[in-house]
Image 1 (tube, rainbow, N blue to C red):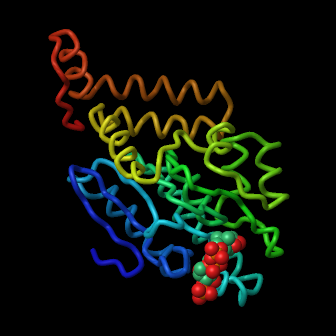
Image 2: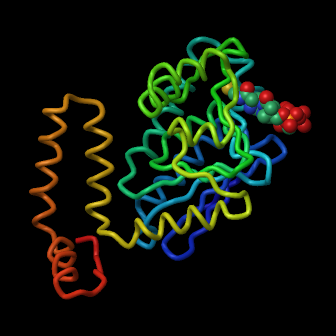
Length: 260
Ligand code: COA
């Protein structure tokens, strides 16, 4: 598949999706969002890919937001349609059974932070700056920020970030649980690859079901979430990966999972 505004590279079962409009600080115009949709579909469908890292080109920005030049001309109907299209695509990152890690290499603002929030894990470089500054532009977040941010860091902190439009630095983002880890900029991609490799050594069906149980469980009652978990626990017992994982432990050797 070919991309214009993204680079898509695959090495050692890891796809690296790089948003590549550095002259606009990787701002997400509609075409770039559509390409992100194709990229996550490619990750999910290709058997030679186990998971993905999402990052931004250049040293300055992950993504500095939705492309304001496009937002500036929107009316109510196309604005709503734009939000829904972006939301659907970002949800595909969240719902991917293959793990996605955002490697936040600089500004992650507005739609950029929303993209990182849709990924399963976030690792930030020490120079990263994150926020949802939409209210400064007289709009609100449109690609899931009002929903995913409070689920991740709690209502009060999420509202503070949204209502003040302030940017948080990497250390504070780590303190409030917005990012999982902070590393020097020069080590960012290596750190994301190392974490993804650690995940990819585990049973892929089990990994996918953990993602699904967390996603679905957070949006339902504890009781229903526990049923989802128990159903997964039963389902996984039918896989040869479960037998391989347990045999490997008992035989004191690394497991060789096949995803079946
Ligand atoms: N949409 C469109 N273009 C953007 C953009 C965005 N979200 N963010 C940055 N750019 C463009 C700038 O317009 C500029 O383009 P130009 O060189 O053609 O004028 C280029 O990227 C570089 O940005 P610049 O503002 O000159 O860099 P800076 O270092 O002075 O400031 C930021 C960096 C991130 C603080 C600033 O670009 C900014 O506030 N961006 C918008 C953030 C935002 O509100 N995002 C939410 C959008 S909903």
